[in-house]
Image 1 (cartoon, rainbow, N blue to C red):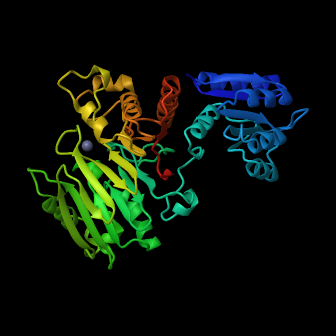
Image 2 (image 1 turned 90 degrees about the vertical axis):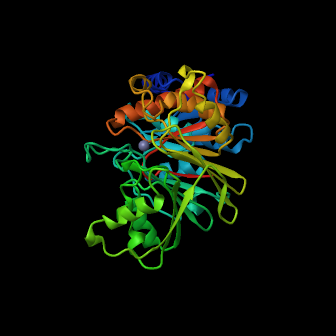
Image 3 (image 1 turned 135 degrees about the horizontal axis):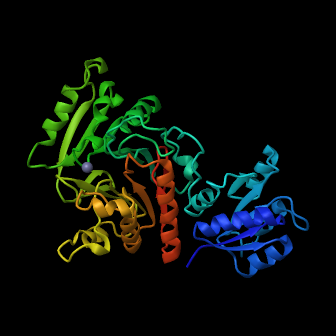
Length: 427
Ligand SMILES: [Zn+2]
């Protein structure tokens, strides 16, 4: 069942355009040109989203927004104000009245439906140009109830042609942080860990750092040698990774720091290494980490973190077989059990389905298979991760829109978000 959106606009041209863009994005759209009638319809059957013009005869969009948001029966309807009357005061008033999004007219036809989709997915819409910078220690802003804050520092696959065109999703390779009320857990040390390291030293809040390495492919450890806390006195670096029969974790990590450029200075942090198996470890009071072997070449771990009744799962590189899997390929079923009920899952969704057909058994997933498996495993929020470095923003936007459509069409009760640098999600 498609998500329902009501467009309220007295200008038939703009109203039709907005409706067509949203319909193309897979939504069920009703266009109403009279705001008083719109309020009656919204009360009778609240849509998921109402897109309102400000300047309308009868009830103006602001008043309509206020009525929707102050009625317990309709206050859950998400309101988008679309208006050419984009004075700062209007924008502020719209947000004060409870509108979730304010879009100026004339709006960008390429991003309009995407902004609405991002709102439905529960995320702030992505910034129009370059990515903003990620920051630490802003949990308070995510709401008083937030116990964990996940931040993406890098979400790309290894780049054979580094420094491609600028991307809203970022170009850094795998790194994600998870902040609890008192500690920080870091997953992978791709190039995204370099800005994170600088932020940790600048912020000064965390001294005892926990780093979990999924595996030793370059895009998951290439930033470790430049991790600033390693060269700053007063830090303890607890590094956990797979117990790989081929090479001890100790040797690999030592070699990374030994071969680091000498101008980085001498290693200062106290290093503590833990080789992990498929077991549950209580790494900090109340923080349980359960690594498991992921479907990816070499010894590769995925991680499930349980803390204060919340579950966070991270599996950046793993192939889900989907419906074409054979009876012998039982990984999907196993993964489904492991990630069951995750409040937040960060998972490989690297390929377009068409590209996946020619890259099977490489250890990465089609986002389509990832979305279906996560939803069927009761995941509440899915972050599609490990974007192919060759993909442009246009392709990634298309993946995003299609992922939203799959969720809407199947009626899944799961939110899907595309990973991008500086994405922050509180749970
Ligand atoms: Zn890999």
